[in-house]
Figure 1 (cartoon, rainbow, N blue to C red):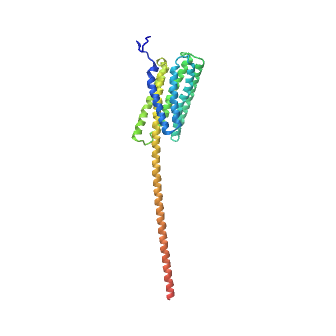
Figure 2: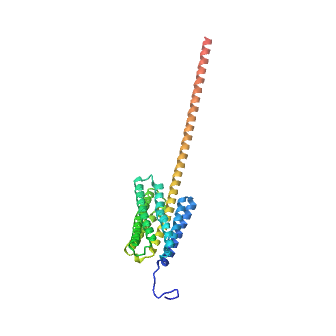
Figure 3: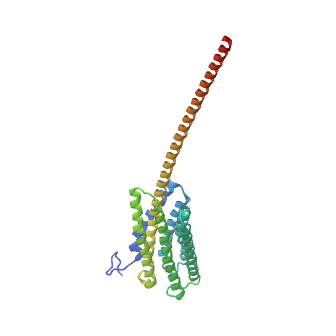
Length: 303
């Protein structure tokens, strides 16, 4: 092998090919989480930023632990993957429940059952990975391949579950009357969603059919980085739309309150006028009665 930086033949390395794009996508997702947290001060966005950091750690550990002698790195990666893999779906289903729980109860229940099934499959997958790691099963063994196939199968299920949840969000948001800019962003998300789902499905199918093409799972990590970046953009869009909705409702409530105050004032003025008119009429009646009484007395005295 040559001692220089160049070789006579091209040698593919997934880590070298994708480390740049993956890093940029992680930075974008983390920056989005920071901006959202600063604007809303919500633990939700802090948790999203934590998941991005965990995904960075998972990617670094997965590449560093390519050699089997680094068993302790595999153990760290298993813990990180449990937190990270369940975390993204948990964020999605929590936001869906908070925002849309009164809109379509049946759809929300279906989404929650789908997310629960994804959690169960993922826990089974990670349990199998723990067994493979504890028994030091080498790559190529039946149990090792079974763990990878179960993981890719879960990846397909998770892609459909998150696409279903995001689709419910989009359907809910389309019930609002949005400004032109927000409507454009919503159309953009509707384009991104099937592209993201197609990338995840294609990548997981490739790992099932031809795992030797990407032994370091570099394409998988790239697709997951794309998903995180798009998820952050979707959260930003959702926050902007909900803020616009709240401001519209507040303005409508203010207009309604002002109208009710004006109506109340008019009713009060009308009531006061009626009372004043009644008092004037009563006073006039009293004066007429007094005058008639005086006339009667004068008539009696004269006679």
